Image (cartoon, rainbow, N blue to C red; front, side, top):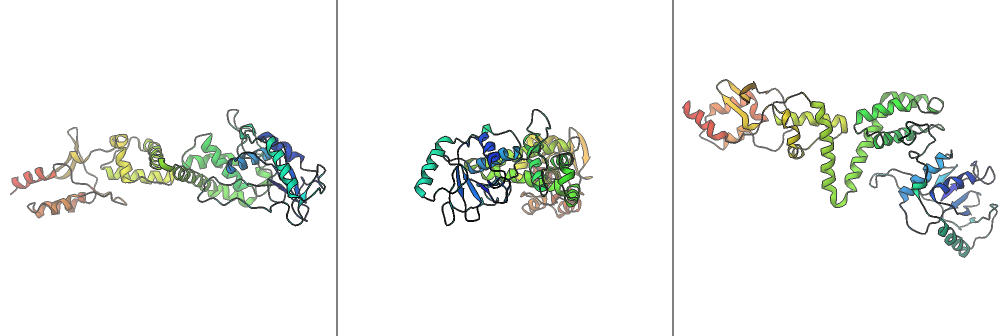
Length: 393
């Protein structure tokens, strides 16, 4: 349903609603019922359908068709029911409500938009006739990107949005965030934000309709906020709507983020798995506002093990202290790094507590180096520590 108020340029007392009717024909809505909404003389234009359709898809397609035709979709001018809204079913606002037809002051209108009758039977008869003629087909709608008149970016992509009035900055930034993710595959917060910031100032109508305050906010952090909000909402929505495949989707999202983070660490080497885990977590927060759980990190060990200079199986304890050995080459262990959080695993000091025959001397060595704070006991540790204890007994 389309709501047109008396002050709208599309009201019959002004220029008439024909541009709206022409635009909606592009998505298969070809026949309507015209109703005076109340004594205020506003009109409601109904497009009945025979079958149930997705309200979200219908709202998006209708708005896209109208805005491509140059029609401003806004309360008081041309308001849509269902209205276009965010796709997150959990956090998004609800659809707007409207006044039902044929209440006090409401009546059917004829082809000249004059009062006809207020009989429910006539309304239902017209409803059935219109529903038989309408067939919602979003594929027929113009390939705009969720609305706004446009200028072309590339023939291979849908056109970019365009400012056509004041107060549209937030809406434009939202559209650009979706565009950059969907069509340009910009999947990290920094690269998406950078593209939005560079692109929004080139759009038609930016200088004319974007206020000085909005321009200042765009130069500061608006683009980063929209990029972050979009990518987080997309990830959460994909996981919540996965149903029985929830765990599979969560795992796939984590793997995608991990693959994006690892190239950023190319050429670096870490003295422990935990040091790499924390570094990846910091990088994940920067790129996706989401770190990695320890279990997920270990699950994909084959992707990152080359970045760790040693693993627990190559740890060596000798009179010179704690060192790591890989391919016969020794390196001092990095014991100055303190991780922000520890995965659930047993460290060396805890292991020593279960071996009372080990001397307090070795416990103090572990404690002094700090090695035991974030390194798990390596396989076979007790046998060769007993050997060292025996040799020094």
